[in-house]
Image (tube, rainbow, N blue to C red):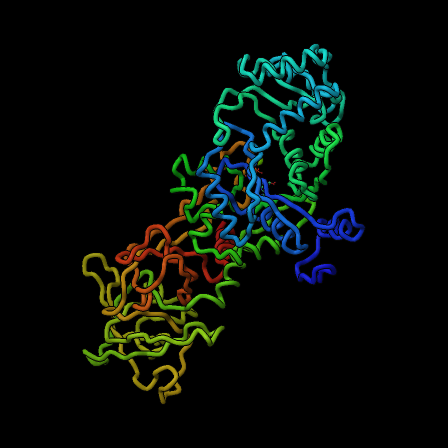
Length: 567
Ligand code: ATP
Ligand code: MG
């Protein structure tokens, strides 16, 4: 569906419709959105939905998008998180210009607003304990009870609130609450807390404050201060919207529109920052940027491109009902992107030595290999071929099943870009019986492209020349969880479902020599194996470390089917 106003080819959705209507009717002449992360962890793939939505809409409708750190909570927030969040958004390709804001920048203004509310008789200082406040709130089906302090005089409220700010009281002794309706069916409207006392330093305001605003109080007012036109948030805030609107109306200030959309959930993973922190702190993964993590930094290190993540976010759609998107869609999106971009190379993960007995001892041929058949401008490269090569262990079976079109005793196979070889002899370790070497012959007339023979074989396998190959460590990453919804089982901890095979390290893989020039973060297709990326952290000139981004096909669903078949 083409977008009428912008000519954008992005699919339309209910938020775009609202924006287009607002621009058409002149309610707004320019839209202004914001992305409001709380700096208490690294961004994950779920956040990209909100980032792509907010920054994407601003781009498409020629508006602006602010980056606003929702740093109202003094204990949990850290500067490391602020830096990582900025890096991730930039990497995704979005720009907030000079509009890097912090809710804490508005603490003075928010305090003034609170005084305004008290003066209007719409807020009061409560002396009930936390326990009592909870108890008085009642339940969704049962009305709450008003606090006996609810009708304090305005003067008394102003005095107590000022003394709360001045640090005269201990944590929890008093709170400031909005005076709304203790019988409202919406629990958020039952005199919500606006300010609480916390004698804690804040990463930006230091010890200036010992009262901190609650999220609901800070968020809408920050939107208003920044002139946000459309405040987009996830569905769990739907029943906070009446409160959002109530505050703004009570203060009589500029009124942004809050619009809720469904959270992005992805199968085989968890998204909450708190849960991800648990994985890091308890050592289930190595770091926030562990390539198995659904964090943006983890996906980046794994080898995902910004384009693939943006496409994924776009494809998963903007809807009003929560749903789970299959991880396979994310994997599809990186394959689709790298299929055209990544150079294809030959790499042998688990090498098996093959000696081609009738190939001249000292001869080395330079074979022509195509860098990307989808893009001829990527050109070709030279691939050395010699008497001793390595092939993948899996490409040989002593006792092959039917339709195994690879190498087996007496059988023939084509070596990619080279010749057809035949397995003449299998050499085993006398002690273990393990196959350690194959003796083969080659047919010189079968050279790819130029050979005179028109012999055909069903299988083509990859290989590298033993003397020219370079060594690399290869890390095979797989899904972090074994079940679609690790949080789905009530009596179990999500960590019980961690995939024990989520990381397999192969220390001595053999790669074609052109890979010695790979740059950190550079991505390749290892033919027949998948997409791989030179690790940006652990790789160096003397030590190649590749991460598997994704297999070439969705083998996961196949494995699942096989497992089901066995039961
Ligand atoms: P988490 O539960 O992972 O900590 P959060 O919602 O508390 O997430 P915030 O830093 O408050 O994290 O989120 C910043 C913005 O990103 C918010 O507007 C939030 O609604 C949005 N967001 C967070 N998770 C998702 C998700 N899975 N899908 C879409 N938007 C999300
Ligand atoms: Mg949050």
